[in-house]
Image (cartoon, rainbow, N blue to C red):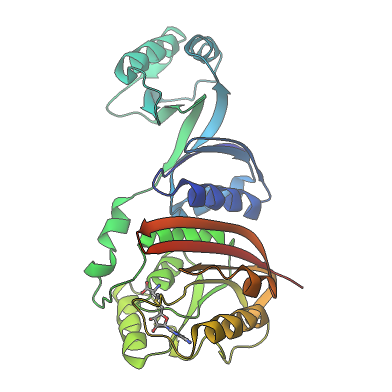
Length: 327
Ligand SMILES: C[S@@+](CC[C@H](N)C(=O)[O-])C[C@H]1O[C@@H](n2cnc3c(N)ncnc32)[C@H](O)[C@@H]1O
């Protein structure tokens, strides 16, 4: 199946990695990229996992991409018309601006002349037209409910501590770890944002947290979403888990400014990364956030597949490391 992803513009680089990883997990590959757009192909089975999306806003069955309005109209005359009521929705991305309402009417008319039943209010199928640098067309398969992430904002959870990451980012990071089924470990789980998202995505999870009060609060948050309180008090540097027992690690290292950490920061990174390598299954990934550049320490045990930098404010640049276990 050929897919067309419409991605978040808030953190596009991460959204692209999330989409690419999704395709790879389902024996597919990314093909073309454009602003907030990625196309690729994969197994049909992927459809039942769409609900796991974090920074992927929509996915469509890709019909075609082209560069001009004339080409778009010409190609529209040849698209396969799905059975049922249809409507065309145009979306402008970035700088390119077309009159979307006018174009929706024009494109709808092309399909209507070909015998399609058009319904704007109750369509069975939506033909999505995205104006990025190129024009991309597909039949909408799934739209992520983005309100759910706002409802799970850290400050709306029963147990809150400042510094918790946003659920949509947490979810995207879990997807980026590329775990189709199995156990996701957050070895410094704090209030449990990553664990809650992993659990709601249908993955098994384990959380470890150094401080009893925070570990207990994390358990409260997990139970609030009807998830098991799989969280233990422990040390990320020495976790007591078996070798090769987890399928992905997703975590957020303590920031020096705002979170207490056990031991010195260098020791935390070097010991924790060694421990991550030990508990991860072969070929699996560790994805983590940090405010430090730790390439050398990471490279002792992992191959860095991606490193993203996001400036949050003057004194805080967040790094995201996506690493694969070296054998
Ligand atoms: C940046 S916070 C994690 C925030 C979390 N992602 C959330 O959404 O709440 C880092 C957490 O790691 C914990 N921590 C620090 N050092 C640790 C260690 N050595 N082992 C386990 N947890 C540790 C801190 O207590 C803190 O709760």
